[in-house]
Amino acid sequence: MTFAVEKVREAGNKNVMLTDRGNTFGYQDLVVDFRNIPENAKKWGSCNYGYYSFSPEPNQATGVTGGKPDLIETIGKAAIATGADGIFIENASRSFGCFI
Image 1: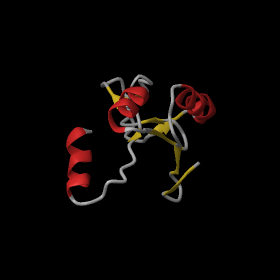
Image 2: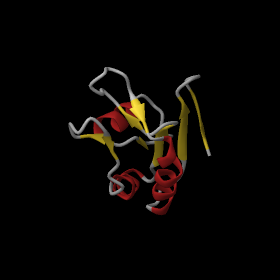
Image 3: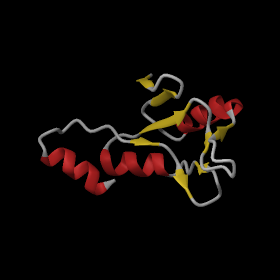
């Protein structure tokens, strides 16, 4: 995130919000490493966590993204427990989001 944050700040915007959305390690899944939240917050001052409305499993063998909506609450609580300053929720059916 270093280069992205620096680019925004160099353009004159000092109000940067980082949003962690998980990592892809080739498991046909997004893996949430909650260590990212306190590490980003320590380095940049804050970190939000963003999760899709259905806990995505991208690039499935069928070519269709799937998910596990029953994990949304658990993942959100874990993000807050590890220090996320906010949660970004995306509704994939309408492509909008909000911070809470």
